[in-house]
Image 1 (cartoon, rainbow, N blue to C red):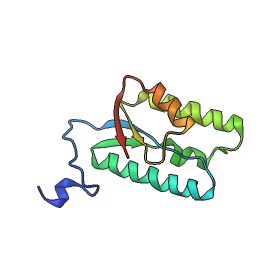
Image 2 (tube, rainbow, N blue to C red; image 1 turned 135 degrees about the vertical axis):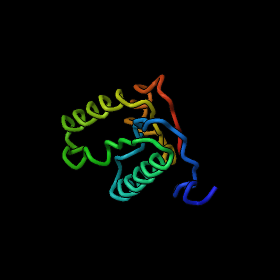
Image 3 (cartoon, rainbow, N blue to C red; image 1 turned 180 degrees about the vertical axis):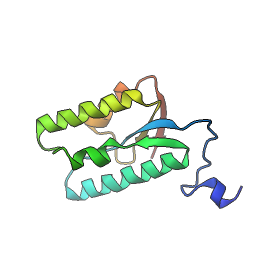
Length: 120
């Protein structure tokens, strides 16, 4: 198998008749350093999901652009939107390299019964 067929992430993409929606679950909150690290990690997981043949949805890469995570009502609105989106996905891909945050734990619990992929 050529490097091009293998994919940029080094994984062999799954053969699929259709793209499956995958919810990306990884940490977001933290101090400035951790937030930058967590955003880079979420982007990495999103890229890997694409390489695996999924259509990834990474809500914590775009919802914080319009909602303020430090304002409790806006954070709750974002978490609810994320859970609504999670409910439409077939798979949850969990980025566990930096541990499981409280928000991630809630998403994982809400995703019980879905296909699960854990990336470390």
